[in-house]
Each structure stands twice: as C-alpha cells, then as structure tokens.
Image (cartoon, helix red, strand yellow):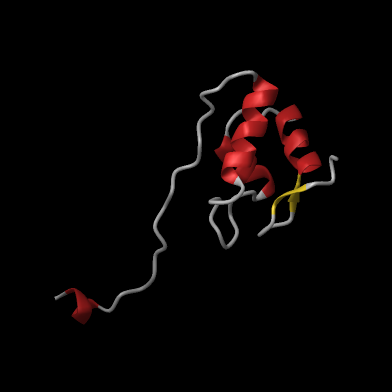
Length: 82
C-alpha cells in the first residue's frame, strides 16, 4: 500500500509522503518542496487534494495549508505590451 503512486506526473509514492511527515512536513507546500508532489504537468490539480487528505489524517487537523496556484509564465515581447 505504501508503494501507491500519489503524484502521477512526478511519480511520488505514498511512502515518500509519509517519510516527509516524519521529517516534519505539516503542509502541502512542505511536502511539495521535499518530494516534488504537485510540481508536474498538472501543477497539483490531481494530487494536491490527495496529499491534503493524507496530511489531515496524519496530523489530525482539517485545515491544512494548501499550495498557492500560480499562473504559467511565459516571455512576452515588449511590442505586444504596447
């Protein structure tokens, strides 16, 4: 059961997330920084709710901080802005 893949984009497994919790992660951004869950193609749209539920169950809190959504950034020509 610990080998279940939680983040399909980055291949993060449940055992890795549980290890993060043992190391002191207490929020989704903490898990993200340690094992890259939520940093793949979907930007956490698929795995963030699952990671949130795992944290809430293990920590015992229902209001666990989530990661902030950021818009994709790409270069823009100056002439396009005028």
